[in-house]
Each structure stands twice: as C-alpha cells, then as structure tokens.
Image (tube, rainbow, N blue to C red):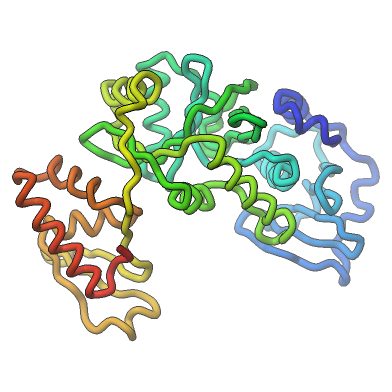
Length: 360
C-alpha cells in the first residue's frame, strides 16, 4: 500500500471495501521462527517483530491465516489469506491494526468516537464505553437530519488549518461508516445529564481524555511517540469539549444550537477532580459503602459509609468532573436549594480529599 493511498481516506475506503488480491505462496515466510519476537499478545491479535524488522499481525488463536505483514514503518502492508473474500471481521481487524499503525506516521488519529456530519461539518462524540456517545450521535441523526460518518472509529486527519473526519471501512461494534470526509468542528466528551450544556476543556484535560480514546501502538516506541504527538496537534487544531445532555431529540437540538449558533454559551474550563483508582462503591443492605481494592486494602483501613447524596457524588466522580458540574448534577437530581447544596458539596469534597479518596 503506497503512501498516497493514505492521503485520501476515500481511496483507502474503496481498496478495503473491494478487497485485496490474494498473495500466492502464502505459507512461505508466515511461520514465526525462533528469532522472531512476540511483541504483544492482545485478546484479539498477536503482533510479532521479525529479525529483518518486519511486523507480523495474526489472530490470537495462532492460525497462520489470515495474516498481515508490514515493513518497519508500515508503508508496505500485505495481506495473506486462504480466501478471496476480505469482508470477514477477523481480516478487517488485522488490516485495521496495521493501517492505524501507519496513520501515526501520516498525521492521522484513529479516534474512538461516534461521528456524524451536520451542515457540512463533522462532530465526534467520544468517551468511555457505556456513557452514551452512540446514543447521542443517533439522536442527531434521527432528530436533526445529521448523517453518519462513523459509528465507532473515524480517522481524523490533521490539516494545516483544523482537521478532517474521515469514514473508514473497519468500524467497530456499530459497523456504521460512510465514504466521506468532512471538516471536524469539535470533539465532544459525553456525560449523562438532565441539563444541557457544553463545557470547554483545558489542553491538559483534553490530552488526558484523547490519550485514552485514540489508537496508540505501545509495542512500537517510534510509532507510539508519533501518535502522542498527533494527539497534541489535534488538540491545538480542533476544540475539545465536555457535553452534558440527555439522549433525546430536544437535548440534541439544544446542544446543536449552542455548538453551531451560540458558541458564546459554551462554559469556560474548570479544574476537575476524580476518585482515585483502587476504590469501589457498593450497595450493601441499603447502605452505600466505599471499599478499597488491590494495594489499597493494606493502605486504607476499613471502609467508608456514605449517604445517598454522597454516594451520588462519588459515582459521578468515577470520571473527571468539576465541582461546578457536580453541583449542577446534584440540583438536577435532588430537591435542594443551590446554597445548601453548594455548602454540603464543599464539605464533602474536602472530606473525601482529606481521606485520600479523590484527586482534587
């Protein structure tokens, strides 16, 4: 695969969608030798580095076919398979992994997001699995007339000015993708909320978020460094916000109106906090109990009992959040006046911090 194929994601889409020509002598050179090194074994794929600095990608079950072989910087990628069909998920996964490694060298970021286009521009909804990014994107499609670009994994190409969201033919679980490219207006980290608003993120907050939601081949130091540099460039070129909203059409319309027509309503960035790793919240006989796990069991004596409101706050802090957004969530959820809620929240955050439960 030549470099100019990667310059146009439309060409890449066509090549993979239409299939590759099967390599002959497919057994030759595909068996890993004693001098080859297994760099990483993931649940889906094993990756090997050969003595002549080639990369071998094959399924974790150890089968010889399908197999993808790439040179050291992935600008030459060859697929070996027993079948002429390239439509099966396993083959696409291997190709995706190899191509996304090459993306690092081409100024392209593979983003875990649901991406739609509206008014000629792309909007990418990202965040951890289960928070509702696909649901929010679908609300735009069903209620605003937006169209899908990618249901799970768009490629974002860095430009001199801004960035471009591209559909690619190896989408994840959603299997929704179109052969289009659109200027990327914004990346939105999704949070469930009864109120609808957008919060700007600092560059450091955006970097922490996108490093968790982009493809970084940690088994290849050079490519990983390039991938991290691409993320930093993307943050400089494209706004990254945190969106608080519901999954319905009214919420979609309100967020669209803010993003496209009233950017002055976007709230400024705030310092955020998060529960430290190694603590879990459990409901035990109608009591909310914070319990240490792992190494924290030896460091943290006993457990902490929380009331309903404190448990609500603790659950929200499983993900980074500002005190202002926590206060809004409390006002949305509970029948309490703002002054009382603010004072109680300040006291709770101070107590959790003193106990070493949160990074504030």
